[in-house]
Each structure stands twice: as C-alpha cells, then as structure tokens.
Length: 266
Image 1 (cartoon, rainbow, N blue to C red):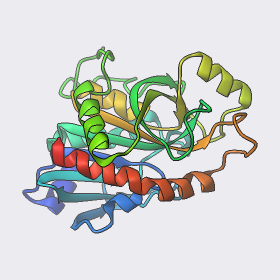
Image 2 (image 1 turned 135 degrees about the horizontal axis):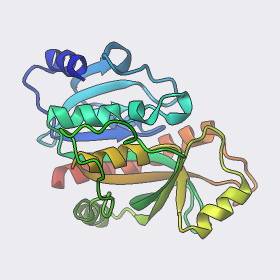
Image 3 (image 1 turned 60 degrees about the vertical axis):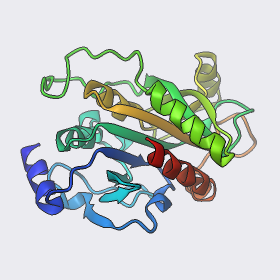
C-alpha cells in the first residue's frame, strides 16, 4: 500500500479526491470531455492492467462540479483470476487518499421481465454469491473493524438524492437487489429462476466485493446498475458480452447525465 500511495501522490501532488467513481462495462463515455491526471493501472504499484473489453484501465483524477474526484475507468474482476482482496484494493487506496463517498456502477442482467434492457436500477441491497468475501484474511484495523455491519451497505441518503435528480431530469429509475456471481460464464436458466426466488432483481459479476470493502472502510456508497440484457431464460436471445458493451454505450448516456446531476447535488 505504501508504494501505491507514494506513486499516486507523486503524480497528483496536492489534489485530494473526496469522491470515487467506478465505471462498469461500456460506461467509459462518462469521462468524455473531462480534463485531469490520467494514470494507467499498469503503471501503478499494486494494480494490474485492465483486460476486459469496454474497460479503459486508467485512474482519472479530475474536478466535476466543484468536487475532487477519482474515476476508475474499468475495474478488476474475480473471474480474471484476481483474488477478491486484489479486485477491491483500489477502494482501500481511495480511503487512504481521503475519499469519503463512492459511486459504483455496473452493467447487469435483468432477472425480471418488467425490468427491461436500458433500465437504470438503484441498488438497494445485494446478495453475495461469489463464493468468497474480500475481507477474508488479516484485518487492517486502520481501515475498519474485523466484523463490519452490512445493514445499510448502499446509502439511503445517496439513493434519495439520486431519485430527486432523476425526477428533475425526467429519467425513470428502478430500485432493486443486485446479486453478484463469480462468472465468467453467464447464469443458466435454472440459476436465473433460483436467484429470482431468492429476491434478486439483477445479476452481474462485480460491485458487491467493492461495496463490502467500502462499508468496511466507512465510505458512503451508491450503487447503480445499467440493465443491459435479460438473463438466460427470460428472452430468446442468449446473453453475450458484446451486447452488454453496446447497450452500455447506447443507454449509458442517460446514466452519465444522471450521474452528473447527482454529483452537482451530493
């Protein structure tokens, strides 16, 4: 951690980020037109290069509507072979840099017929089906307690602000439970039925580990899913990553507009 922080601070000098944003698949357009300091993941000690299509693989330090932000243009995934402590390492780094608020975005598959592709869903809660937990191992007491409470992982205050922003912009918002699985294979129709029975509304392969670590670090967190496809068995089309990235680009402009309004008001 020391080498990571030393390297980043040398690059950003006196810039102190207060808000971190993690961009999911196909949402890189949020950074269009933003000026700041970009650092490729591969240059940062402790980070790994991004390997997933639709993920640029850079940290961008910039100011948005008067807020100092650090943006992850793409994330690390469990299915790439990274342990969860590695996929969530950036969140711990952000905490050490002074970040107090976090926006997590992702591309997700719908588990409900009435939650159509193109929808934006606020994450109210999550189910961790990844088979592991990012806090396994020795606890860092400087970040948080050994057994953190998970009662309100996703901030009610931030959710309410996002709803108000959506109302002003006339953007429809849904709210639901996100279930994370390890991937990289998509869910089977039987698994999709099971997840719906258990109370999940959307599914994906990220976000939950980052949210757990953010809660551990006492970072106020907002989670937002861009629904890019129906999960297996809900439509005739089979889910595929190209479709996810394309829908992210098409419907992502609406989410980018909403996030900009949110940052103004947070």
